[in-house]
Length: 182
Image 1: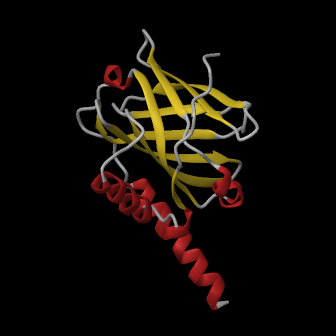
Image 2: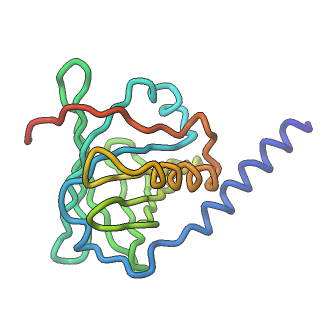
């Protein structure tokens, strides 16, 4: 019973921390345009725990649309030479820097906040993915190049811990060759 209450308390605490995440105040969706490298990834999701050792750096091509949304195309080169690709259209909400999209691949509803962005250097995102009644927090750190400063990596680590992600579930992805254009 004590273990159950402890786990329940930790889950509720992580939800309350996640609910307090706010997007960057002066967010500019046009500044997100272009190529980003996925450098940091953090979540307590079981699929990640099972696969994080095999994950490598991938790229995201972000394209703002005429109606203020964000087309997101991800690609990552697998060890067998194939490319894993995923596309989503994130729709802007009435809060700048907060977007929502439904993953057709995974069947989850995703509420994403652009937490901290320096458009020519890095972007820190926080997403709450909900599938059924099972919400999961995912934080990601993107860079315009394949390397970011130790200070930014530590800021991402601390932010992820603050959202309830366990230390062992925070990964800095190894560099990887890029997928050819689709």
